[in-house]
Image (cartoon, rainbow, N blue to C red; front, top):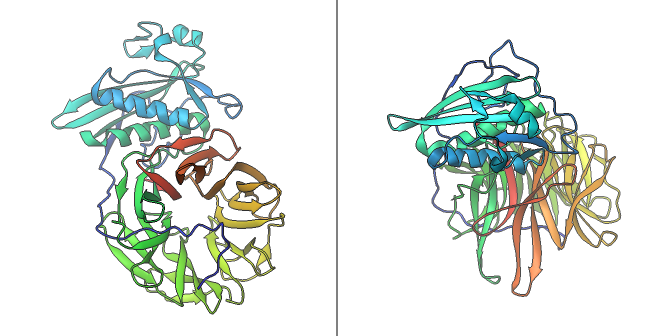
Length: 460
């Protein structure tokens, strides 16, 4: 059996009937006066001939004041307004202005009365409207710059009424990109383990949700045990480990069709799948005779190739975003540490040297950071940390009784992880997000205990 240190997370879940999860179709068009740089994937592109983007220098130090006017006072319009507000506030880079402070009649003939918004110190204004069109909804949205007194973005969406939440996320992503200069991350989903039942007989199911905890859908029924969900970075597909037999094996799960397929059944155990950046292959760990090696498996029938030997325990591999390198954890030097090697397994180099154990490395999609879990007596418990790929610049983001499983959002600015807090009746895991600067930690509300998040790509 694969020997792991006591703090490692060997998450168990069941497999069963699948839910079909497809992104709703969206028809989109531009509305007058569009300008600005291109918005994120899944959001409509802005027209050429733009004005300068809104200046947001210092947003990291002080959130940007933004006014989000109600798309409607009730119904779908009010719900979309709330999603946009929650998304932007959640990022920690924006602070929505209380609508109760808005000066009456500050939008005249569809255009802001600039003096009124200047009094509120707003840097941006979001306006919008929702109308019914033959069973569908049309959502019009505009972003305005108070500084330049001009429209920055104007887009209309036509879609089914039940897609209102996704429309809100897409609009928030567009505002984020126009004002921050980076793609947003709100129109994305997260795979995780949902935990219920008792401490002695837990039920752990593979699940997927919107990044903010909404629209939870269970993909397995808890009748079999599994570990390690991983989201394909290029499409709506998961990989995970299942104990449908006596030993764990790696499966893929297609979120569009609900199809599950066995892709890794090697050695005594096969665990810890991670996708390549192009989504066409998987890294995983194969254990045998007390050791564990990292292997690569092609999803298109490319076979299996071994990247490390099994003379030590080599686990938790993760590609760099360009696919040229792999970070992993290994006890080859006597204690559990992080190493980086070439994508072909060559040139392994140790990058962690702290007085403790390093585990669960995750490479940022920006390529500049590697997140990890650390346990050591010097810090008095578990921490989530980040370091540069060469091991420099190590710093702690979160600390607690038990924290781990960090996963980056699509733009690399935010991490999601699990945090366990002991109580008189036992303990349970909850998901949280935190910025890569170590600030703005926020709980992700899920219907049950939850752990082991894997953040997926934008739903383009």
